[in-house]
Length: 230
Image (cartoon, rainbow, N blue to C red; front, side, top):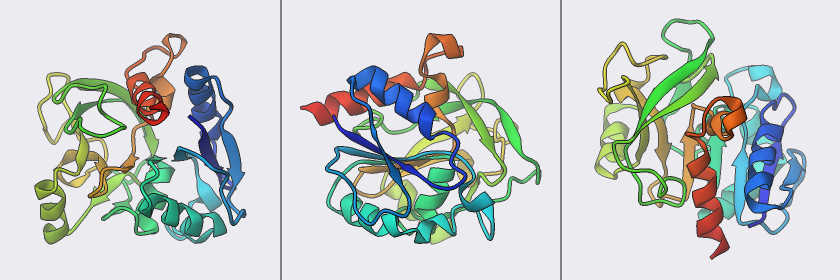
């Protein structure tokens, strides 16, 4: 599997993702600067977390207009898997590759902590190593992670089984107290309708090695490597 990790000014999780991918595949991902107009041939595109362009205007709004995004949109539309984590999720919504928007946290504060999320869908290259209903402990670190979509869009997402993860209690209950940012319907991540694009606010790369304190994020990357290498 050959992966490309997109690097923006302000990205700070690009190396984290690259380390995980190399440990699994044995190949160093291509680190692609956002000003590039083309992508090397790759099987996976990752838009990592961070604070692209300092989060000016809205998180991800400026990055969505970087030259590389035109190529990413074309690759995504052709079926190449695209994973957007945290700021990457924000960029995916701002570029129109995923529905909805990410707004300021309901607390109006930056939130950095481990949260519980419940796996909602497992028939994708990203989530097939998980069990539906499985509860994961994954870190979050964001100021604008409050996912919102209007009623019609939310119904389309629900009806299309596009919700990937929901914030939940340690027992898997979907409650207001387990929602760290005010996201509608406790949404922590969504897929596009085709299932080849995943945007999520939690950071699976930050819990993908026992030395980091847990491995709940690792199955996502191993599943990707296995699916794409076939």
